Structure formats: C-alpha cells, structure tokens
Amino acid sequence: MRKEIKETLYLGWPIILGNLSQMFLGVIDTAMVGAIHSSQLAAASFVNNLLTIPLVLGFGLTMAISPLVAHSIGNGLMNKPIVIAINGLFVAFFMMIFLAVGIEYSQHFLLNNMGQDKIVVELSDNYLRWMTWSMLPMILFMVLKQFSDGLGETKWPMYLSLASLPVNGFLNYLFIFGKFGFPRMELEGAGLATFISRFLLFIVIIILIIYKSAYKPYLQDVRHAFSLKIFGIKEILRVGIPSAVQYGMEAGAFAVSGVMSGWLGYVQQAAHQIALNMAAITYMVSLGISSAGSIRVANARGQGNIEQVRKIGYSNFSMAVVYGVICAVILFIGRSGLPKLFNDEMEVLKYATGLMILAGVFQISDSTQAVGIGLLRGLQDMKIPTLIVLVAYWIVGLPVGYFLAFNLKWEVYGLWVGFIVALSASALLLFFRFKYKANQ
Image (cartoon, rainbow, N blue to C red; front, side, top):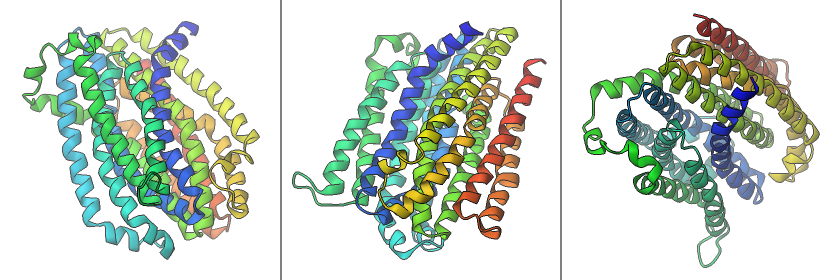
C-alpha cells in the first residue's frame, strides 16, 4: 500500500497545487473585497453561489478527459489523446457559450428574485457579468489541463495555475482599489481581474502544449484530430455528462444553501461564505487525490490489471481518511483566527467561528466521497454514483439542513449540519460501490 500511496502522491501533488491555486483566485477576490465592507463580501458570495452550478457543470464535463486519455495510453493508442482533447474543447466551448448566454439574458430575474438584500443585488450586477463570461476561458483551460494530467504531465498546468495567483492579485489591486490611474471599481474590479487572469491562462497553456517537447509525441496526428468525430464526442459525453451532473448536484446543494443563508441576512451569508472558502480549500486537496486516483485506475483498467485497480483504490481511501483527520484538527484549532483573514466584523466572526467547527466535522466524509467519485469515474462507472450523489445531497442533506435552519431555528448552523449528513451518506455508499465494482 505504501508504494501505491507514493505513486498517487507523485502524480497528484501538482494537481493538488494547481487546484489550490485556482481556488485561491476566488479566495483572493473574497479577501480583498471583504476588506471594503461585509456587503461586498455578501455580494461576492451571492454571485459565486449563482455561478457555482454552471461552472461546476463545465468542470465536471472536463473531468472526463483525463481518465479517457489515461485509458487510451494504457491501451497503447498514442494518437487518441489529442483527438479526445480537441473534441473536449469543441463540447466545452458550446456548452459554456450556451450557459453564459442563458445567464446573461436571465440576469435581471436572477438578481431580483432570490430574496437577497437590496444592497447585495445592486453590488452584484456588473460583477456577475464579468464572472459569467470568465467561465468560458476557465473551462477551456481545464480541458487542456485534464489532457495534460491524463498524459502524466501534471507539473506544467500547476506552474501556470501558480503563476496566475500574483497576476490576479495585482490586477485586483489595480481595479478594486483604483491604483496607478485606474478607476476604483471595487467588486466589479475583482470580476474584471478574474476574467483577464482566466483568459491569459487559456492562451498560455495552448502555447505550452504546442511548443513543449513532452507533448510532441501526442501531437503527431493533430491535423487529423481537428476533424471532429461523433464517436469521440459521444465518448466524452458518456463519461462527462454524468460527471458534470455529479459535481453539479454537489456544488448546487452548496449553492442553494448559500442562497438560503442570504435569507438569514447578509451577516450570516458572509460567515457562510468564509467557512465555505475554508472548506473549499481543503476539498481541493481531496480533489487532487481523486483526480490522480482516477487517472491511475483508468490506466490500470486499460492494461486489464484489476488487482492493481483494487490496490490503487484502497490506498486512496486510506489517504482520504488520514487527510480528513488532519484537516479537521487544523480547522478546529484555527476556528477563531482563520476567519479574520476575510473579515473583521465581530458579528460575522461569531457565526464563522461556529461554522468552522462544523466544517471540520465533515472533513473525513468530504475527502472520502471525493476520492470515491474519482475512482469510480476511472472505472467509467457513472450511473449509480450519480444516483448516490442525488439522494445524499438533494433528498437527504438539503431538506435536513432547511428543517434545522428554519424550522428548529438553528440558523446557518442547521444548513451545515445538513452538509454533514449528506457527505457522510455519500462517502459510505461510494466506498461500498467501489468495493463491489473492484471485486467483479
């Protein structure tokens, strides 16, 4: 098992750092606008919650790319990965254009019919527009990142993602606070900075893949790859749509809870966003382990090595549990200090401190279910895991959270207890599903 853990970490640590850097783009935005006023923080939270579902649908679709590429390499099909990538770009482009146009035309309705404070609605308008259109280059970048990850070239996308952090921070400084002659745009400036950062990421990764020698063996048939193949698109959709639905339902549940927290006032909504940011940071590591496990399982499956599939899977679950315990301890110890990185208003900090404890409680379940989804995606087992996520979050977790928050008056804490129930149910069922599939 030690050998499997070592190999997963070797493949996964660049994915983890890349995921964390992308997560920190949002954290930087949140921290910098939160320094202005809690109403700006609440507006950022509201917009990010609105966009969570379409963004994660796109992200989930791209998660099909790396296991399909790894499976092709395991089968010895060296010309197929670039075909998968080109078809993935085609599917992702039209999907994100469709979603962005839909949001653009429904923006007025979305902002004014969600029960949010008037000040939050006013602040959200232009920020929502920039963040909506920034999804397109972000998801196109993710397609090429997943292509690279599936080839085992995980470090270069990581370097790009890390480089985007100071770029985004500097652009935020210019546009949010109006430095060096730029107008003071506050929250809208954060949206503009994010759009520019994501667009640059996409352009640079294209240049990297074209000119870096590590990718050249897989680009021999690149002209032929641009002739789109219905079978190739269907293959991506067969894995990508259930994957998108899985992540969409999970993220959608968190997004709905974010809207519900707004019904409790912008103070609790701001506290909810702070705790959610911290939980999302820890989740990025779990997602990296999940992605590495998915790639390794897909490659082993392509080689027909089922015993290796089992070893990879059980070692990944062990890593998830250990990591979850470490995160729980860190969040508990930092429950008072960490929220101060985002906001210094006493009322917000009071709620955020309690939410940090609850976020710590679900860490083991969160990491375990993330790993389970990735391993099953590597086996191309999609239908039952999708059903598990649906039941855990939407049939169990959200109703429990709503009941506790509004009927029993647990306020925002009740929403987070609902998360604990959903994640625990999902983690347990996904583990037994993998055990069943690995023993077939």
